Length: 271
Image 1 (cartoon, rainbow, N blue to C red):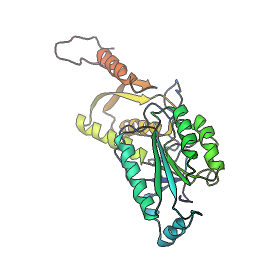
Image 2 (cartoon, rainbow, N blue to C red):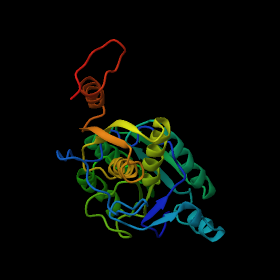
Image 3 (cartoon, rainbow, N blue to C red):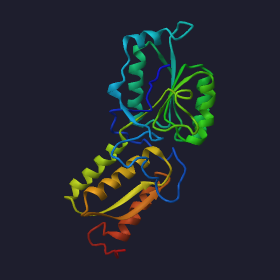
Image 4 (cartoon, rainbow, N blue to C red):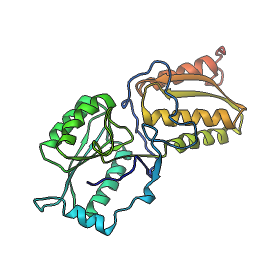
């Protein structure tokens, strides 16, 4: 099994443009969920303790064992099932390929489901016809994904998830590992940069992903908590939640028109 005995592996990947997108969670309707742990550290989707990627490296013995895994002797085969084709996923795929090259494994398919859980389920079915030993994926929807990836697990495929986990899946019988970025630190960094830009005081609007989505909830809440705890002179005076990315334009416009005067000479009443 090409995997690790950890619940959460924090990677050094920081600029995940596009990750989270509009998928990965159902609209909550009452704001984002709370952080799974109040301390200033990223946790796994179910509160798992993190381990650093620096602590997990393939040894020479691991590499030799992986090279011998394929009974037919033609090398391990892997599929990468992404939800999108943003630069973030391209970089992540390069990292996967770099590790697979060490053990002589081939990537037989890379897909883009466009954050559509039905399309991702179809991708799983399609690549399973090629009988891969390994699947790497970023799960679009935990509920539908549980059904979509179950046939792969039952067939003995080792599956590594990025950030999200299917409902009901348990380690180690159902998946090899879950890896993610340091989500709390991302939100913290955004808050610190905002505070620096404002000189430590001012009024801001907070737009959050209004869905039960592990990745975005962690980052959104980290930003808010850092602002509120460290910068008492910065006030969040407007909030808006979105379920789909395209909604953020209308939310931003509404905030500006109701609370601030966005352009010189435009007289707008304050809320």
